[in-house]
Image (cartoon, rainbow over all chains, first blue to last red; front, top):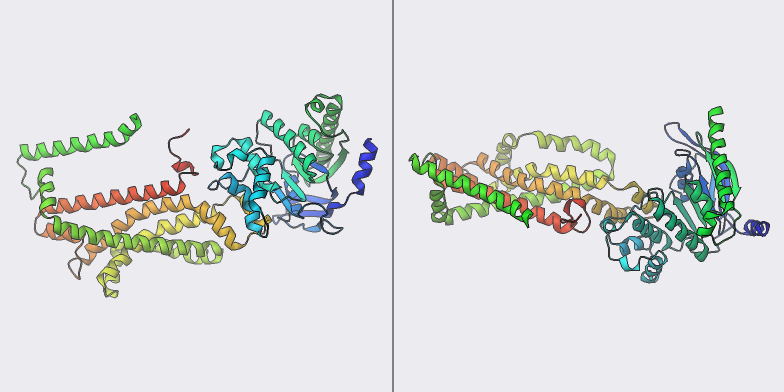
Length: 267
Length: 261
């Protein structure tokens, strides 16, 4: 079954194609060595690596918020997105909500900025219900807990029905319990909404639980050290977290991260 | 409850005790009213000279409010220009500082000579005094935008205008209101100082003029009454700006979120 699934993936259209992309900052710091990777439709690809390995930089390149120094980053290289709006959404490390606006206005923001979307209210309703925040639409961010703020941030990303969702350590600042719950909800959302997600984290547990594929990065300069397919069946639940298979993936990722760190000190 | 009592009750008690002590000492030592008038006499003067003093108060308030309005309009406009380009900010900001550090009493005579209409000259002086906190705070506020939100706006291809309206201006509001509160006090000080410098010339008939004239005539009770009105005007202005800030920020900004944990 695992082999069949993988076969499916390679047939799917490309969403992200990074070809030898490199990033050198103005101060001469080499953030990313030439990196090549692809993300296909409906994948949940996770980049994992130590702090400062260029994970966030890579995500910004994909979002178009920064330009590569060399190489190319292309979205939907084979033509327009077949699925969804063709839009890219970004969930940041912190909720980055507008403190002065209520939940509804925060979620509606991308639609307001881009314009040209009919039935904004309906879209906002749907995004809020996806994260279970319908009852908090009139609340201001400061009245919400950290976990709820993060859900607002996710609703704001989902409101455009994005064809690609980029997430930069979205649950890193949350407590372990909230984080596990949001991981579960995100896994559900990914499956139900047929999302394509490129996710960044430094938690191997989160990576192993959520992903269909994990890219292990090493730092200085950042590069892809290893690629691991997580072939465990979907949907995954708490039982998966307790399984030997999950423990095996975690151990494997942990080993690879250590090896990646060793490869740096050798250099 | 106890906080409300503390907040309003305690200063009132202090004020009452000071006034009572003042009244007692003046009476006990028979201090002549041209040196230190008693609070009761000041009160009586305030009532007796009300028609004169109220006109002066209205005049000073008019100068103050016009100056504050000018400082807000001009200061905010300049702040917008500053954040559009670092070059403009770097070229102009030192002159804003220059305006700020030069004492108004030194510039006022020039302005009063140059500007024919005394009233306009006074407003101009007070505006110069009041404008700096608005410029510097609003500029700082417009720049103090969450970089993540700025990225989000870029990702969704927000125009410069959308970014200004939906992101920079709301982010700047708490800073602006902090500046406004300082500027309100400065506008009043500027109006009074400018009036002092203008002296008895022109149509001036504000509270500073009353103080000046009362001093010359040794009408110390009226001098105190005018002083009291200036202080009162200052307190009212400061309270009003605080209320405005509260009204605008109460839903979201930490500084104005009322008494919740």
